[in-house]
Image 1 (spheres, helix red, strand yellow):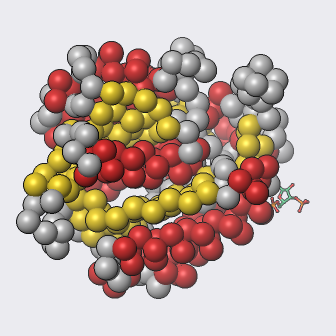
Image 2: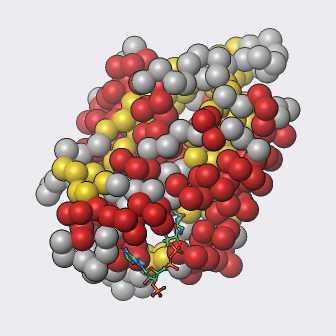
Length: 323
Ligand code: UT7
């Protein structure tokens, strides 16, 4: 049988750091409120002219370097983003060209903060069906461009960044004790379309619009749906929570992450947290957190890692991987 093995990851953060104290200079907010409600201390902001494709390209280059894979070997590039460079073509094709892939297929997926899990799931299915041998999955976002900087209930929560992962097809005898993607699951419920959305768009206003969120509503769904998705993905992989080495959740809010860990019965020391330094980078948050925890030696080969995310749609999902 064919298995998707993870062979490298990378991340990129724009240079400019915006602290909570910086924000409180021009906005009726405070460091204490932001940390207390979300765990966020700072976020990175893309420079003028620095595009989502630039962030994604930098993360992809680091993942390629860490895996020792040449861009020419990549036959599938999936970019998860809800802040593309242009309405079309897919920003993934710009990254394909800048990387010098030469051939293969590149396209974007749009599942907001759950975009990376969605891209991982699609790439895994491409590999397992034999359609792709080496896949590059990127999450890259410039949310600073769709934030209403006068809306304190949303603008303090998000940041810019990118992360990338490379998957490779491997022939294995069985899926027992193999390294790679053991399971994924994805769900959506469009009845909550207005819980987290952007108030503009091509077909509606012909503007990019600004992010709007019913924070309490999303919070309520997040803990319940993330716990269910993680348990579902563990069940598909025939694994129990006691076997999990690391939980790498979408980094939206420290309170959601703590509550989900508790509900899952997971030791809080197994939770990877980057929301304090990166804020919510939407589809980039999981691969960025992975690149941090692999880089500092916490996530090691053979570790069982659970990934989970929820975002606008609502769309949510989880994945179980043996690193
Ligand atoms: O990535 C997609 C997933 N997104 C999420 O997971 C976000 C989920 N939601 C949340 O994380 C939380 O709901 C928030 C962090 C957004 C807000 O926390 P909350 O405990 O739900 O606060 P709240 O919205 O009920 O606001 C409480 C108070 C309000 O004042 P009043 O009405 O009680 O007087 C707000 O006006 O806090 C006020 N407030 C602020 N105060 C200072 C809202 N934003 C701020 C702010 N600084 N930045």
